[in-house]
Amino acid sequence: NDITFGLVNNDILKHMTKQEISRRGQGDKTNRLARLASHLLSQQCYYPLFPPAKGAKVDYQHVDMMRMHKRPDVLITPGDLNFFAKKSQDGKSVCVNPGRLSKGISGGTYALVTIHDLKDKIEGVDYERKAEERVRVD
Image 1 (cartoon, one colour):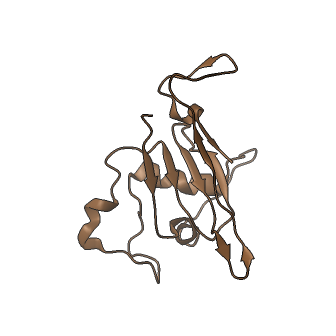
Image 2 (cartoon, helix red, strand yellow):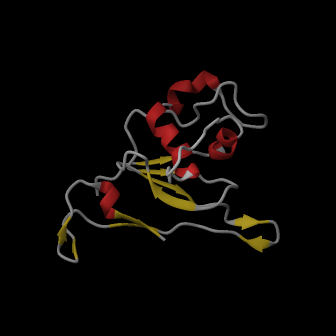
Image 3 (cartoon, one colour):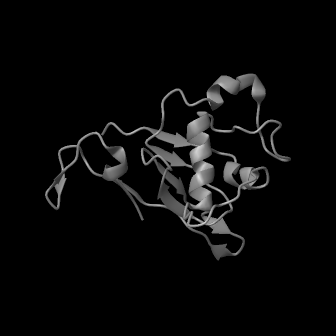
């Protein structure tokens, strides 16, 4: 279906919240978690922090594997922060934090990702390559 996925196994968004300094201007309605995920895309790295957060399992001998050689259409960053599915700041990727499947004794959250085929027409819309319009996350 011509869709590229990127997946992070560390809770990078949680680690980045402790490192980022940001101030929103008046009328700025950007989503904080989507902005953090967009940092990964703009820096083309799955773990752009150095030194890594305490407890993070990062092996810098394999730093080339942390680079995004191709921009993912869907970036999945599971973690402890609130679950979300948002377009990146530039609108070219979909960033998903499905949360954790289990949280202690209670149930957690997960994401159901639907990708419409290039040949599908939904409500009269012809989908081309535009992955951000072909991906639906529930």
